[in-house]
Length: 174
Picture (cartoon, rainbow, N blue to C red):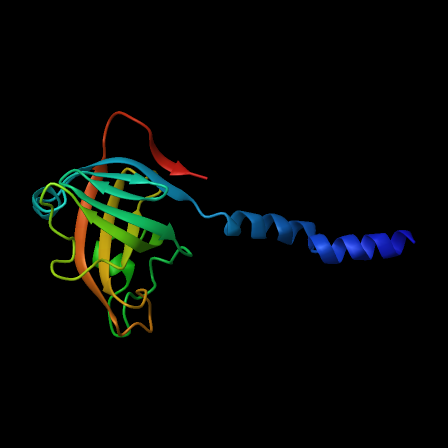
């Protein structure tokens, strides 16, 4: 009877894996989430979208663009963004990165803000950030498929560099 209860619990709860493997799975299954207020570093970021506040559900730019997003699986810095394209690391020019990919579910433009992809609607954003999340590059993509090594219908339409503001809540949330 005990064996039957243990087997049933194991099947229903998925609690029969090797404990060391379960810890590894739990760590990799809970990706970090980047949040915080960032100041524009480059002319491109200052002139078009402005400063950015990264939240769990989206990105709010100081010039009026808001991207509502849904997190996808994290990407490796060495992963290419298109079939014959560069890797995230090559685009951002750093290999020590974490890549958080998000699908854009809605774009709102207030106060006469321009879209981050010009005439196209942003479809995906990748947040490429260093270990301490002091610097982040927001890569914006248009197209009907996510960026990736087999992507042919995804296009990088903007790259904006930011640095962490000195005050306020910021960093990575686990």
